[in-house]
Length: 110
Image 1 (cartoon, rainbow, N blue to C red):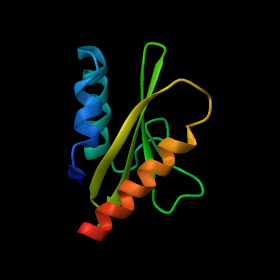
Image 2 (cartoon, one colour; image 1 turned 60 degrees about the vertical axis):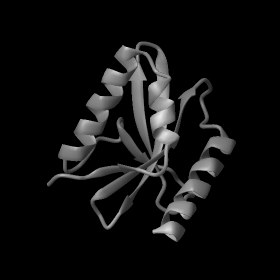
Image 3 (cartoon, helix red, strand yellow; image 1 turned 45 degrees about the horizontal axis):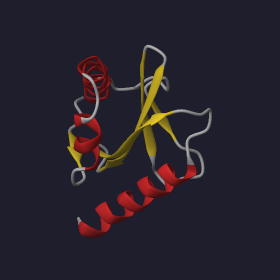
């Protein structure tokens, strides 16, 4: 089984462009894993509790933690929304709210 990854507008691309080459490599590794592995370990992809279908892609490089929000569409598509570098234990509420808005926007425009 292969998943297709698509981007909703440029939110993910803008985030990705800001990262250094090693972080980009790690992000690409995790995205490839999500594309090809049937059951992706929670270490890399986790459903956000209390959200309707929002997931976070989890990327760690050295001591830095990055999160990229996404959802599934028609079972296969992974739609990438905003990404950010995580500085605290909890995922910032404003980042989750932004991702939910983007997810709703994606499904309305579809």
